Image (cartoon, rainbow, N blue to C red):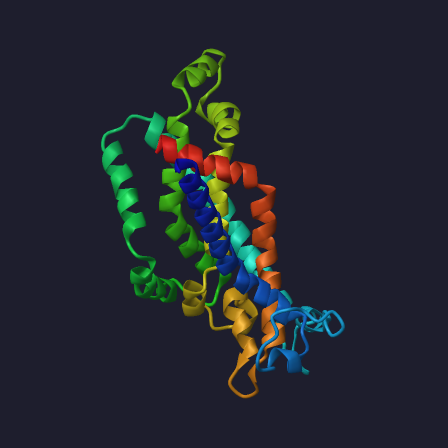
Amino acid sequence: MRTGKKKLGRMIRITVSWIVVMIILFPIYWILLTSVRPVDEILAYPPKFLPDLTTASTRHYATVLRGKMGSSTNQYGLPTFFLNSVILSVTTTAVTVFISLFTAYGLVRVRFRGRNLASHLILLCYLVPGIALMIPMFTIAVQLRLNNTLAGVILFQIAMNLPLGIWFAKAFIQGIPESLEEASRLDGCNRIQVIQKIILPLAVPGLVVVGFNTFLSSWNDYLLPSILIDKEGLKPLMVGLYIYFNQNIGIIWGEAMASAVITMIPVFFIFFYFQKYIVGGLSMGAVKG
């Protein structure tokens, strides 16, 4: 009797798991399907849930990669927006990881008055909703003439990602035995050399997690760039893709979905390439934190 109940419970769990997976993956499947369909199939009702290989094509991808929108050519298109997003995300990630490493090391290893207070203030900054900071950041950007510049967006994205990055790095550095640092100092290493030769190699999983979270946050950021940037040539992907939702000619679904697929590729590539570090880093950070 118990064996039958266990089997039934296992079957229910497996069924529910598959249903959840299908719900999560269906939007991605539909985006891929729409991106290779001709316009008449995209707008057909009732919709077809299976692909038709005889009509599938990469025409929408070719259009957006040439910077076009429908039959017209924009001065700025997907290639420009993609490059802007790469500049924003890579720069924000690199600077955030660098500052997080040294700040976390200082909070963990350097003993100074107010160290605990500084740690709690950093955590408090992370708890403040980002949307509550939009108006103050816009005011500061205008006064410093950082609006309509990639540098301004990068600066504020770094500020918003640093609190979480410091706390992740802090959790990993706390798990590194101080005896390793003491041994390296006996060999003549200064603090910078200790960080370079001891802390950095051992904290790689944690720094990868910090980098991935920062990259994802910057890459998917819509609100901050849309507030700070008006110039078409400086817009990142998440803001620039709204050219395919045109009030005059309607929504260009095929090209919008092709652009969405191209937008997802870097995130998937980074996740699968660093998967073992990200999964391991998150679990280790949760235990140490």
